[in-house]
Length: 222
Length: 377
Ligand SMILES: Nc1ncnc2c1ncn2[C@@H]1O[C@H](COP(=O)(O)OP(=O)(O)OP(=O)(O)O)[C@@H](O)[C@H]1O
Ligand SMILES: [Mg+2]
Image (cartoon, rainbow over all chains, first blue to last red; front, top):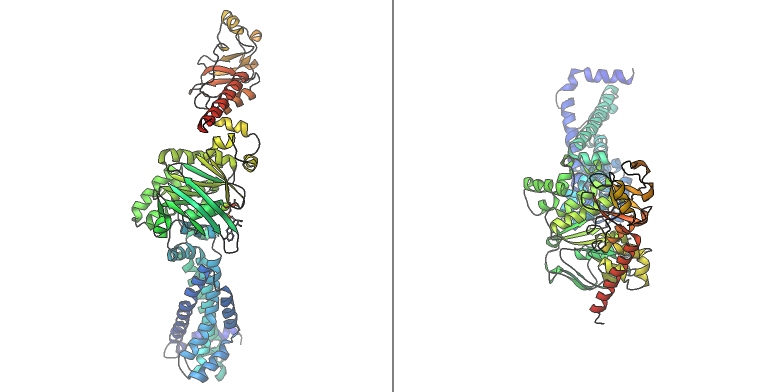
């Protein structure tokens, strides 16, 4: 049997489509963990990245934090948090957030830093308050890059959120872990396919978001 | 009036960009800051809108220290134009221009209506309103920069090398446009350039700065050309300042000769009579527009051949054009005589290089006398 057959068998078994272990439930759980992690990571990474990028200060500290964050293995962190905190959502959220903050932070910082200084100078010279300079002059131009940082973070979260299943939580990781344990490869392949599909859907969402939010003037002149 | 009162700017790294500079910038006139690269022009300009804070000294606007009002209020009362226009690439042309009115709390509708007015004022086609900056040429972008600076009708306009990134033809257009706008609006303009010709063309007064941020001379352009304060200024003015200075002398007083001007249908008697007045005759068409020069004995009455006339060069308009244009016309003319025309292009007379030369000497003499009188001699 090859992978396609496994996948076909998994998706055509109607038992996989309802109940607490059904695809809709696991899918919803997976999206919920991912969204939560992304929101928390954004709430941390975006303001810090915007601020440091705008002032141009703290670049070195930021690079250090980012490298450290990237060096931490998510799975190791999960085990550590589990031992330390026990069951629950928190030991899952921490590694996911740690994973997602660096790309958001560093890309946002770089995006704002690399905005052409002359419109910024003109804006200040016209008497635009600093907050508006950041939000109305720098961010609209930096937006494509900022979104790409968020996109990277989101995709990493979606793929890594499978580890939630290790600490008895739900999500699409359940299929992979249970399948491996039960030697049920149908389930493993089905779960992996769903994760991959969700990652692609995430890409599509970000593509649409950038079509909507990025000004034509920025898209075309970039 | 903007008064710069012994201002010094020392950057944190120790560079003295401006050194005890004092300037009284007159209202409703163009004051140009000119000098070699790194002489502190930009620094001086940016101290006026507090983009740079002076280390010593003060700047007064209408007698009040500029530090007495909130910095953003000050900046909104001063239009600011920079070299590469610095347009917001994510905003349409109309919204770029509407920026300061919006900052001042105008409604979107009113700000845009105002922006549309400004586009017309600076000579931008209204079809460009919905475009983005990347869809405009460099010259058009610079016009948008000027319109944006003028949008809230500020009394003061600060311009830092606004036209230096465009080619010479476009630059000349932008300069003429600025002079025209200034005629209409009468702003207090501080204009930075490193191009002495631009300074002389635009400036009501020109401040020449030397490296190290010290003032070398502050004078109207004609005075700068006639009496440079020192070898630095003289050198900076470059060659042919004598010729360039003629731009400031009107051609009004030139004595024109009408004798050598003959219409193309002139009869033999007339030709013979006029031949005595000058070595060459200027032939005009029946409306009086110049056609070209000829030696009198090559002209056949009733059958003057247009093709055989010598080019008459570029005519000047007495009163409107300067002595420089008149001299240029004479130098370029194969006969050494310049052609004077009225506003409609009809020949009103001709004038020889010699007569122009006398007028130049007389003009110089008057200026010198005037200067002597002022010096109390
Ligand atoms: N932020 C700064 N920190 C340190 N030195 C500076 C800074 N800005 C300008 N300078 C220095 O101050 C001097 C004057 O600079 P400024 O930009 O005013 O010159 P400028 O006359 O406008 O020159 P240019 O024609 O090249 O634009 C230069 O020596 C420059 O290197
Ligand atoms: Mg400069």
